[in-house]
Length: 110
Length: 112
Image 1 (cartoon, rainbow over the protein chains, first blue to last red):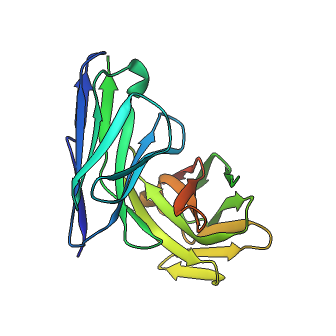
Image 2: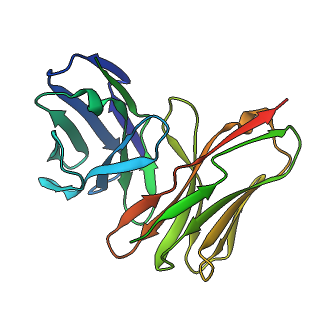
């Protein structure tokens, strides 16, 4: 069966510091991968998606970036965090028309 | 542009009641519609997925319906329990861009 992992589970970072969140999927190959952000009291916002290694599509211009160095690894990064980057970050995978989500990372920028 | 709306934003009912959560979408050209559950501080759990050609799907006490012509889906929860308390999200999968369009969710509280 397929599983999706995210780490860290929680993160507290100062403004201006770098960020690296990691997502890995097991039990499937060549999945589509997604990064979402969920701000407090708001819906999910698609940040990036990837249909293959090295292929990244950005949905929202911002100071975040994503990379897919391996088939089942998806990384969300920032060089300098802003206060507005605080939120709950969710990684998801799909092999068709259904998405499955990881446990999420709670990021607080102080 | 597809928009997905969930009403009500919050709902509180006594344990044991049957209830309906609503989801509406503006563009009927969807591939499928998914219902998810999210517990506080947790990720999303997929509950039911309805293909565009289907009218409903059932899993245990949950039943989801889909009416593409009217742009509506409902999630019916029978004999509600305190453990059903969570935020319920619906999302429409658009075949045009392979993306999910999300509602803002309904926060459900089941009172013991």
